[in-house]
Structures are given as C-alpha cells and as structure tokens.
Amino acid sequence: MEFKCETTYNWETMAVMAKAMRKTVRRKRSRRSHIFGWIVLALGLLLSIVNFLDGDPVGFSAVITWAAMAMILVALLFEDRINGWVAWKRLLPGTEGATAIFRPDGFDTATDVGKSQWKYDKIQLVAETAGYFVFIFSPSHAQLYDKAHLCGGTPDEFREFIEKATGKPVQHVE
Image (tube, rainbow, N blue to C red; front, side, top):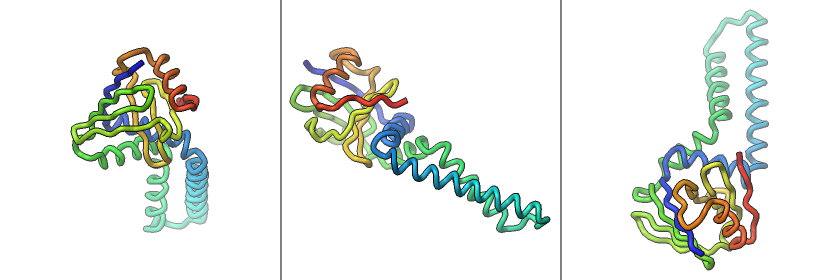
C-alpha cells in the first residue's frame, strides 16, 4: 500500500504543528511555563491594585508593569500562533510546499529544495488534529501532513497504516 500527501506550510499550518507539539512532547514544559506566566500576571495585578489603593500616581514603573503584563497575557493566549509565525518565518525558501510518499519501509519527502528519505523508527510520536497528521521527531522538529490532500486511501486507512509502520498509536490533539 502506498499513500501520497501534498502539504503547504504556512502560518496557520505551522500554528497547528506548534499546538500538536505543545500538547504532546512539550506538555510538561508548557504547563510549567503557563503556571509561571499566570503567577507573574497575578502578582503584577496585585502590585497595581496595591499601588492604586495607596494613592500612588500612575508613573513610569506602572506603565512598564502593565506593558509587561500585556505582553505575557498575549503570549499565554496566542502561544501557538506566535510559535507558528516564528517557525513559518524561519522556513527555508523552497520548503513551503512538500509532497510525501509513504511506503511500508519508509517515506520520501520532496520540496523545491530537494528530497529526503525517512524511516519510521525516527518518529517519536504521531499526533492527529482535525485536518492534519503531525509526525514529531523531537521537541523541536516535526512534519505536518494535510488530510485533505491525502491520496491512496482515507485518513482512517492512513492512521492504521502509520500505526503499524511506526508501532506507535496516533494521539489525538484537539
């Protein structure tokens, strides 16, 4: 059995990939970062309230505190989009589109830059979202495959194929 998939890497798809990585291989680190971020926000808010109740005028330090709180809040709420945008900006020219052919012994990925051959044993984890399969190789490297452009079978058949090829269950990411 052989599957073929064409994928376009853009800001949105890179955000999906960032989310899949955050919810799987980066889960513990992400949780710690979120807890720290919310604690810093709470302390900043508490500091602002205390200063306001003391009758302190709004000064430069208060404005800096609010700006820092706003930046932390934006990072917490839009983390996947920010990480996706950064990853998209770091893409090598010519790698925005990829075509992959999956065979039982491995898979080939071709871009405008070149071709790569991969073995399934290099995949640490396979995640699945509503529209994509994400192959995670490490906490900082993954590849995304668009279900809408999958040829050679259905997404369910591909899921079964990839579970058998990797020996790992596919993890669903919402």
